Amino acid sequence: MSDSEKAKIILNGKDYECPVIVGTEGERGIDVSKLRSDTGYVTLDEGFGNTAACESSITYINGEKGYLRYRGIPIEDLAENSTFIETAYLIIYGELPTRKQMSNFSQKVLRNANLHEGMMQFFDGGFPFSAHPMAILSALLNSVGCYYPHMVTNQREQDLEHFDDAAALLLSKVRTIAAMAYRMKNGLPMIYPKRDLGYSQNFLHMMFTEPYHEYYPHDDITKALDLILLLHADHEQNCSTSTVRTVASSGANLFASVSAGVCALWGPLHGGANMRVLQMLEQIHKSGDDGSKYVEMAKRGETRLMGFGHRLYKTYDPRAVILRKAAERVLKIIKLKDPLLDIAQRLEEKARSDSYFVDRNLYPNVDFYSGIILKAIGMPIDMFTVMFAIGRMPGWIAHWHEVASNPKGKITRPRQIYQGEPERKYVKMRFREGEIPSDYEADEHKSFGDGSSENASAKA
Ligand SMILES: CC(C)(COP(=O)(O)OP(=O)(O)OC[C@H]1O[C@@H](n2cnc3c(N)ncnc32)[C@H](O)[C@@H]1OP(=O)(O)O)[C@@H](O)C(=O)NCCC(=O)NCCS
Image 1 (cartoon, protein in one colour):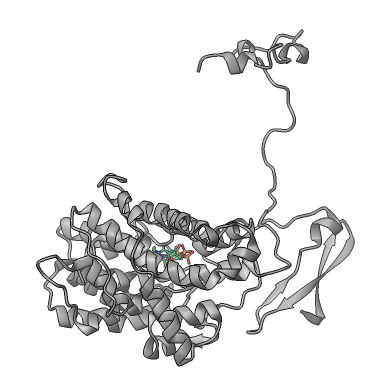
Image 2 (cartoon, helix red, strand yellow; image 1 turned 180 degrees about the vertical axis):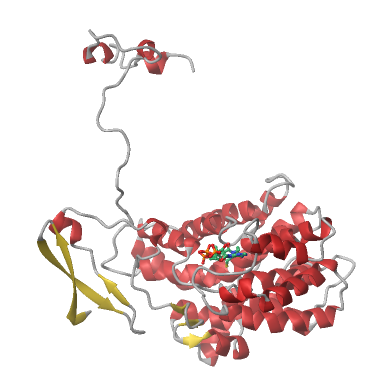
């Protein structure tokens, strides 16, 4: 808190002072937590574009300068030197692990890779083939907690006591569930995880190995996937993370909270955007366009270039800079002649040199390149958002912990400005379609003697 700086609010000629909170990177926020009790007023900020919902020490973003840091460490540094699992440790525990901590953590993640055989029933007729993998993922992340009742007590102290195990377990199971959801949907036999493979390689193995043909990905493909996961590991108070924090604020366990996060991530305005990039490319291709007409349509405001622009980043999304290079590497290795990838490259070149996009700071974002890489390595489009969910798991876990371990934490319960009808009387069914008679009496609407009402007893 800043001792010298205060914000003054003048309401009906009266002054109220609010303290100013200063973050470690100099961000300033007006603390209005006493505003309603002192003045009767609330603040209105739909979409929370101007509202800090909490103080957090996990991730720092500066969208103007293009900074993204996990626990203070720049994303570029982590992308160059770390792995998804090491970064997950950093995000969850706040520090880079020692050799011993890293080995224990990796072992824990590895040990938890298998699913309880009881859970395999879900993949054997428990869902229709048409089920979206995000629906399966959300349902099964919540269900997996049922096999570990001591971790899902909804008693803060007890759930926190088992936090280390629950965190490693979720990081591991989310990957297995995702791969098995894909195999079930495609009628493929289940492939179990292997003990000697790293996190991302194991995922590719579970996705693409066949009983008669082991899948060995090129190192650069495994690295590119690991990088995608690392770059998605946290992004401060986005929609799904805010959802996880909201659910956690009620005292709900980690499994229930991250399962809600998956549902929030599913939407096209959030995790669904990478899928939309590919759908756009397919649409362009089907129409016989090489991308030029689509760019012109976007410039006329008739459509948007999916995977371009970002609400926070007004310069290059730092994650996109990193993934652009990874995408180039992957495309070189795969030597895949895919017309969609050609269109993507053309769109990118066009948008990066066209004044419409340059003047509006519309750079390709992380979804543009992750979509291209995932497509190139053979990931089906409906798994794109699932990949995002696997990557975001460390962030959700860390945010759940931040909420659950805050002794001053409150349940999330925003206010609203009510804009509905003022108080009015209940109108009986027979009076609703015509004029209400002038001798209409409120008494007429008392419930019947048996506690039911005319309405309740009427057949719909
Ligand atoms: C991400 C997004 C919602 C951010 O929006 P924003 O920062 O609020 O920007 P605005 O919607 O205010 O747009 C600012 C200007 O750029 C234009 N613009 C923004 N994104 C555009 C895009 N992807 N294609 C074409 N024009 C775009 C707008 O039409 C507007 O133009 P105008 O000033 O002439 O009216 C937006 O860029 C978008 O819809 N992108 C495509 C979807 C996407 O990739 N989402 C994933 C984000 S990680």
